[in-house]
Length: 620
Image (cartoon, rainbow, N blue to C red; front, side, top):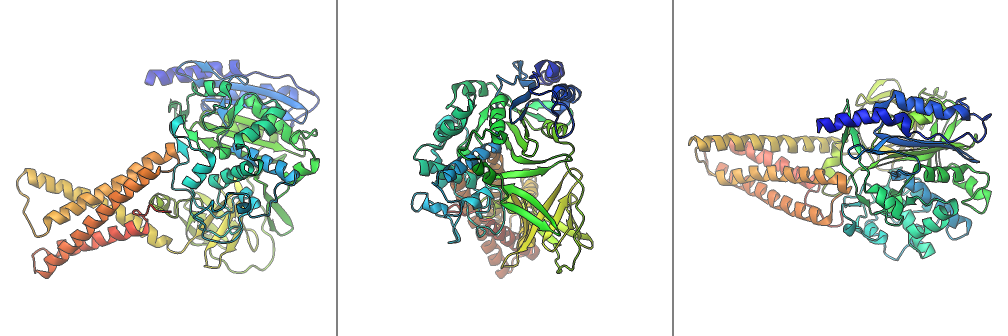
């Protein structure tokens, strides 16, 4: 293995320049917003690739303007073990969530034809009774889906199949994996793969044809994108299908890139993230989004509407645009961009363009590394990291101190325990300034606007308080909330882990005493020992769930149901242990401390199982 990795690093260094393919400049007098001439751009990209071999396993990059391709290149290998070098016209990579932008383009094509109202309840376009987990009767609009404001938490049930045979039809998987709606539509933004895929299914329902077929007919074919697929298994384009089979994915371990295999899994709600293809096809798509010829729409006004703000925060005299009908904004030294990024088990992607200067950058990678941001900053300048100046005025008092959690988490169902690991403390450090777990700094800018920053980024957040007192910081497509009861959840999670660890230690001690024949019997010993074993089994189920969550992006229902049934048995054994201890205390048995501690430990453990819904597999 070590020799393989050493050869991989050596090969990476050797091929970085050789694999780059420069396309002649379309207009040598033109330059990027950062001031690099089109003519010099290719050499600057290749120079970066040569100087930063640890920044990627392989990556492909293309820069376009409204007239076409300025530069495309690829560096490294898509498979070091077999020596397959990356090329811009013959290598494929997964788009991840960049695929979502094609949903929004498709929706706006239908809007242009008068076939959809962005403010209409999407249930009017879906089969009757499609959803069964909605908490609110409020309409869910297409704009809600574009802004990720439908109110869904993360889904418990699997989004990805590990075999082609396990792939479900789009409508079936959306009903199979429907998450719980825990927030009122429009209350907060919580990035939702599920919501985006629902939008793709709306396209399917309106047009009467599979979403993948619609995309081929209305995006791929008009743009000449012959080397891109969108179906989960990539079998709608044989060219892509064959090349994706040979790709390997790599993870940087701090000193070298380590192969993690092909990571070939199948995204069943595929509109949200299953596109895969060559960088030059992705460049065609980016170029179409900024071209004056407007090849994706009949009217220029449609594109203008698509890229108009749907999420914007105001402070003082300033307006900060966060999103435009599903496209997200980024701010650089010389340009403001619109686009999307993406990540899958098999790689990462980025698509961004500057409408004012009419130039775009797309990057694809079979891993995750520095190349994405480096390419953007070559073209658009350094990302803006300066905290905006606070507006003047008298503000109402607001205290963010406490515990917060991402709205994009599992807040219901048997994997709720795992999301609790994401709880973070917010502490006040100065007037109108807070620290978030030593990771971020929150600075108040205005009545309802805050700035969240670290060493590399600055994000503005919209602040609001819900009717139940929950405080919300909306950060573009994400939100952090201070829900009631987070302290209790954190306490129970810690208790659950500690009690399981103590149970393991006690069982080891008992085993040693048993082997040494020094284990003394006591009243209720069998039931107490059985409960200690049950605690380890219960914790083991959670560990097993966590292990399959990444490749599957959730649980298959048989995994959830069987795990929950095991938890029920464990819960019952803990209850029996409590009963045995109560009986022993009532009977005046010696060792009262043992029985009291056992009762308290089991009751805490059982309380955690109830709060974290470890036995709840119906509906979720």
